[in-house]
Image 1 (tube, rainbow, N blue to C red):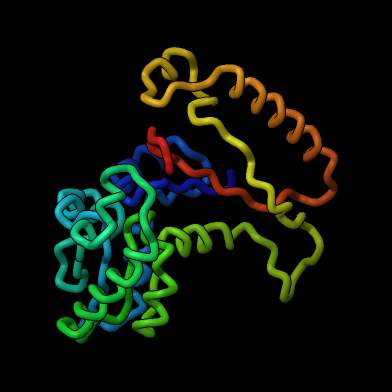
Image 2 (image 1 turned 30 degrees about the vertical axis):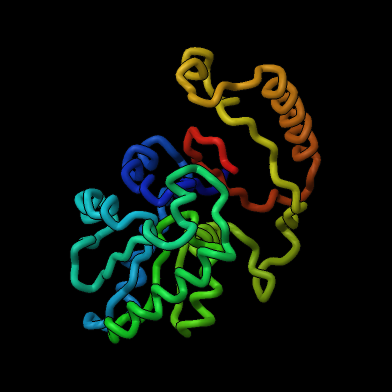
Length: 239
């Protein structure tokens, strides 16, 4: 992978460990965007951070301060949790989130916050469950909204061909096919034994074979492969 990210905003706690091991850029959470967002606005402007659980974010302030360059409790960053919104409890339960119920609730909550905090100039969605509501927030508030998707776009754009000028036709277009992956397929047997979600050995072997076949085809390409993003996921059954 050309870059590595995480499937949960709270993976910021593993940012230091991950970047020591990885040779590619690592941004384990959308929170890594905070310094650049803060630099773009007047020091008196405020940034609203929406998180899955406001009470769970502040304990990570030491990590965020040391490795992201800002303080969670800084007056510029207003943290609001979504844990009490109708339908959002599905996140904690590991269930599918009812977007049609949660979306209007998030927009209503944010509009209320904006009435209370007039100096909010932008919004950051910390939780990876929140990007589906980014467009609704942009439309309702006319404010810039950053999330895990904008973080991925930023880092991956550094590897992509610029079609407007410069050297052309050197990078292959993405084939729109996502590489299949079975959780735990890259682990050794002793590590697999520790997984909550057990690995299906037959499926893992079949996908490993398919992966090797695909890799052989890549070697035949004249152009360089389009950039790829690796995602570190939680040991969890995604709905």
